[in-house]
Image (tube, rainbow, N blue to C red; front, side, top):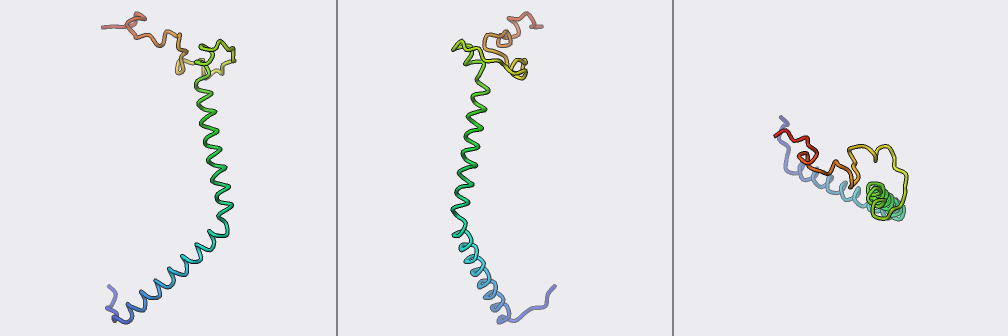
Length: 104
């Protein structure tokens, strides 16, 4: 346990900490004022990249449905022909009792 310090020592320490904090905050604000344009450009590029990826992912995941409704023949990848992603006209959408697999 630390020995008790005088009130003057504690006040001086608090004043130094407050002054140092103010200086560092001022320094940080000055730095951000210098580089804010670059940060905004980087943030915009990241937002555009995320939006583009989400649009691509939506387009990729709805391709079989677009084929069915538009009649377009777009080749499917192997991952889209698996049972994890059945086509709307597939028997995988029928309940089990309609397939004859119901054991009740």
